[in-house]
Length: 317
Image 1 (cartoon, rainbow, N blue to C red):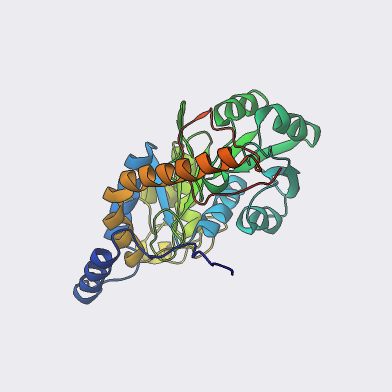
Image 2: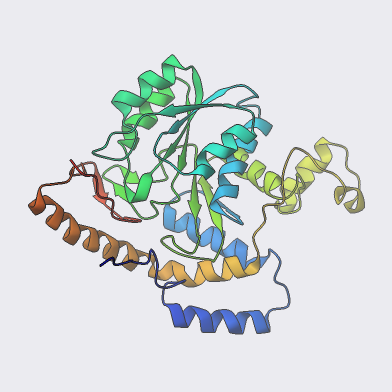
């Protein structure tokens, strides 16, 4: 007999409470397009992740696309540059590389970590002359991110993290998603927390965060702070609010979320720490059975302080 185990049973953390509050919010709010709820969620998530800036998107895939477009807009990479990516990943990590007309170079992963490790990744990145390493932290696991970050910095390789599957995982040196110029997160239904659809980019780089907001809004300055709007308008000779509405400063897309995304994210932030702990405890119970059985490749977690697993993989010997 076959047993099918659903990937997710609930759409939200604290399911019924979230649904009731969402219903009341939709009935009472005047505006559902991107606004104050999204901004509050960005600030709350940045604080939770311990990064300076967080920029909210309509999906994690959009967040990945926006990061590469931002690098191009800022002149940090250009068409034809090579981008290394973790060979064990999802389509939303690879497709943006191809869409940006960059060279996609797979970087092998270690079965014991499911991720690229510094000792094997760097030779590939150097041999292929990669300008960027867009690594994926797979299923809650990571490689030795601190070493990867340091070695890439020494060789002028920009590091981006796709952390969509590893929200909450911590290494002894810091949180997954914080070992790079910027990292993406996903709030799709089946992930650690859900805003139905949604994604985020976190970074400590002011210029990068600002360009992300421009990329997210078709190239407009619409979601920038008034002081920064003035900077862009003065720089490009835009004299009126009317002309600003029809000025597009650089290449972009419409990747904006809705207030529903922001509201749901804010509602679930307080529950995240408990969720991470439960995920680690569940993995430990199953890992013990895997160890006793002896038919599986065991995972190296020595560099991980808190494992917030997205799923529990089994690799047969």
